[in-house]
Structures are given as C-alpha cells and as structure tokens.
Image (cartoon, rainbow, N blue to C red):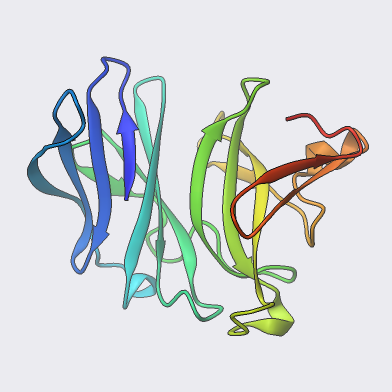
Length: 193
C-alpha cells in the first residue's frame, strides 16, 4: 500500500488487488478509509497474474501512477505507468502493450518502485530487481536500487545503474549509494543525500 497526500492535504490509500489498483480517501487522522474505487483495472496482458505496489506523484495537474505487475519471482515482473485525473479518479494506462520499465541487460524483473524527494529537492526512486544471473535466488539475487526520475517530458525517465553503484548522477559526482536489507540508505564517496 501507498499513502499519497495531495496539495490540498487530503490523503489517499492506494493498493493493488486482484482486479487492479484501488484508491480510498483517508480521514484526517489517517485511521479510516472511505470508499474503494478501482482507478486502474488490471487488463494489460503483461500485468497478469498480479498488479500491486502503486506509488503516485503529482506534477502540475497530472498525477503519475507507477505500479508493479506480473510474478515478482521472475524476470517478467515489471513496472507500469499511468496518468490520472485525481488520486481517486480514472487513470489512463500509458504502458499499454508493454511495461514502462522491464527487464534489460543488467536488471531483471524491476518492480516495487517508490518515489520520494531528496534533500536537494530532486525526485528519486527506489526499486528492487534481480541480478539477471540470479533470478529466483531469494538470498542473493534480489537487490534494491536508487535512481533519479525525470517527469519533465511526455514519458518518464529513470536513471539507475548496475550493482551497488546506483544513481548515475551520484557516480558523476564521484559517489554512489547503497541500500541495506533493512532499507537504510548510505552515501559513499561524497554522493549527495
């Protein structure tokens, strides 16, 4: 599940279910959800058998929804992208025929993407993926990665790198980030936090 708070202060709970991504408005104290609206039905072939891990960010008047789909234990797991009219409104799938972010030469089954703004006011992402040579190895095969996200064009872009050196911008400045199994992010060799 993901909690998205809009610019007006209203928070929404987003989650994946058997039939798609759902949204519910939360009470002011965040303890009660009202309604259950399917904002993105699961219907693209690549999304089966699971659709999960939604995260949302607003840029201007556009709400960008990212989500994971398929089987996380395989290289077919991937990340989709949709744009929405509101956090509880209808969303339009932008990754219709294929995922927005799928396996490629250095990462397999990328998913679980979450977005955050860092201390330099830059939009970042953290996600997990398999080492392509270790897909299915639950002890050594799946790792967390950090990256920069650019939503300035018509299609989002994410910049990530292979191995423990993640986030190309950090490497360009002489450093990199690593994440521990418990989610602690560490800066190395001067990478900004």
